Image (cartoon, rainbow, N blue to C red; front, side, top):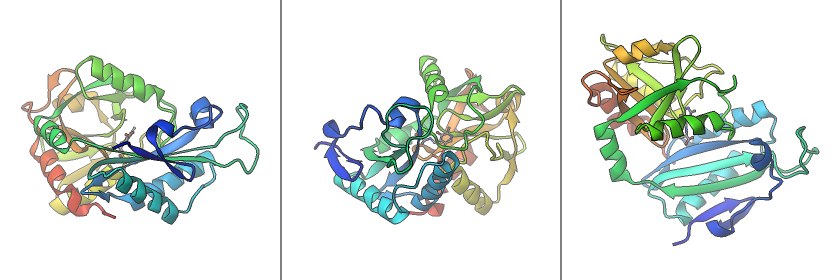
Length: 285
Ligand code: PDD
């Protein structure tokens, strides 16, 4: 079965799904995106993803091309047409097509909208969560507005590639003061020896992960102690547990940081419990 993409109002086989070479997403990374988990054919936390999309578009002054209800219809249709049970749906909105000029295109230029979806291997993801992943660390070298979910992801691409080349699944950015900000495509968490869960506060320096927001709700219900603050790499190395969160990985235990085992080197109890209970708190549509 050929995969189907939505491109500016049309559902097309992936091989025919293309955008103009003068699309500003292609030429300037002038666009934003969202990734939503699909589970049992349902979208997870669509409403919160739409809220964050509105934030990203607003900060970049890109016009909202479709009402959330219309976008929701497209999401569900792309999921249905691709017969996604377990996977992700990807949305990208750019400032549209215009003769190349750094400044904004003429008023009225229509943003480009692309939606794709793909299956993920549920069994493989569960196995990975059972084993835990390794992370490496890299210097934070991104711009100061990473709260905007922009498609401009070069530092993240290079960080992830560095991780791959070192046999790890994720790279954590560490800022000049020695504090971990977040992963190349996930939020970063640790659990201290005395059982406190720590994740960086949200401001312009990290993406406000939707999974992060829901995990905070799960934690409150489980009665876990939370500190929302930046943690240092030293604290991470001394931690009892570590994990990352993202729409595509939910809660993923981290068992090695820069080659050193975290805790006893196995997935932690808290990370595993958060992963187990996550979908009781997430919205499904
Ligand atoms: N990444 N931080 C960064 C830099 C991210 O790219 C992501 C998500 C997150 C977690 O956000 P959320 O919980 O809303 O997925 C944090 C997506 C999944 C991606 O780029 O594929």
